[in-house]
Length: 351
Length: 229
View 1 (cartoon, rainbow over the protein chains, first blue to last red):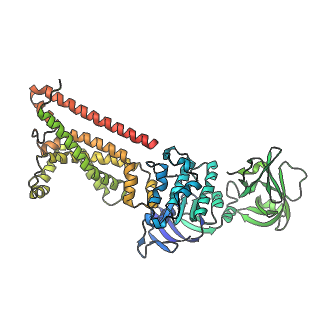
View 2: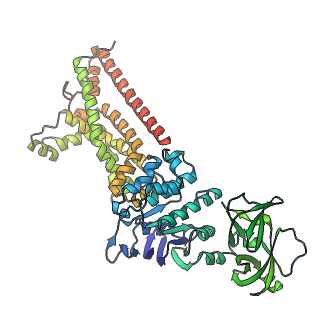
View 3: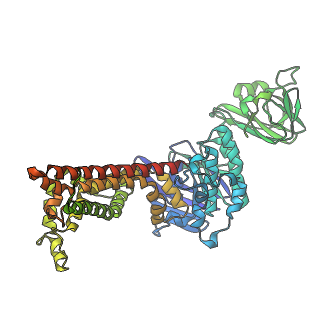
């Protein structure tokens, strides 16, 4: 997917002026609410007209004020997954799913409805009314409906914001697998750094109606480490736990990690805040934290008065966050060896 | 005892015919006007709004008089109709026009309320899924404003049944031809010996009104049930 945007749009007191060229299957648009993310979504999908500028997708001009081109939304083949599922309340689940599919020309129908029904596990919902679905089920149907319209591009406009935490991480694998399996590129719009880390490869950062930087999800998380409430979130995909003294021992690096909130048998995704890692210059005799890892410092970075310490242990990577004075006292430099202590309860299971 | 003369029965049938025709004729236009007022923004929208609602505030007699000027022999619409050999004034068709004009704002108001409650994102979803605007209008906007349409139609039908002032001016009060229930009651009420006759027709009017409300209630409950399913 190759999307080129250079547009301006004024609405009341708000002016959006966006210029970007993005390539790739999984692109994020990040920004706080009111920064113009949704306006950009509307401009790309054709629900709103830019005052001037140009938008092209894979070489096709969607809008150009100069050439006087403005494709109506139905011809752009850009589907949207909204924050609220926005299922048609007067139609059943099946009719909702097939709404876009029926309107897609036969030549463009690459995706088989049954395949989507299988991937999103919609079979048991098919004959239900949409008002009898839970929030997560609704969002799955909305996703299926969008994908079945066989779009060139999927716009996910904060699709997880209306869901509670537990549900959110249940939906993420569906979002990812649908795009990967059917080869549909997406723009993922969100104000959550964690969602950006989980869903995207490249990110456009928006502020006050402008795209201010392009970055990787990891870079974004590092830049926002000090100002974010949760610090930098390390994401760990752990599997095959064994139970030891009431804790779950997951294989990780060359040893194991002890986690209190584990789950039997399955693989799980955990987050670990950079603020929950305590660093020791020397091996502490005895500590209450259940995980003590010998690490090498591979990189140090600054983030608003805090220091991020990139640790490496047996090929695995973790980022710890300390204040500048602590970095000076411990005399941490790149290449030095250090001990990281992590409580078993600091790992938060996401799925 | 309920006693109805053949003229009364004719008046009842005519009332129903006029109200039904006026409602059915106004529906497409009412839907279109409501759609324009809810979903379009353009200059002079306020003017349209005032014009549509004007019959609500004007005395029906005034509306009737304007219609008479418009549709009469010398009115511009009247001349046109005359040239085609279609007599209009003092026929049941004029009664339909009178009812349609007076009831139109009620119809538009109800449909508008229904349309305004539709989440704009549903329309956006439909468009981005490949539906043209007309397709969206038929498959999303129309079914989702059905309750407003139903409420508006019932209101308009009921209002048409009761239409008096505008009707008597453009259609007259000709028994068997243009005499509707209210006009017949008016006739009976003017002669002291016809109290029973007047009461009988009043009773019929009450029964019809109750039926209209009842049907409306049942239909909207059904829609509600379907939506919750």
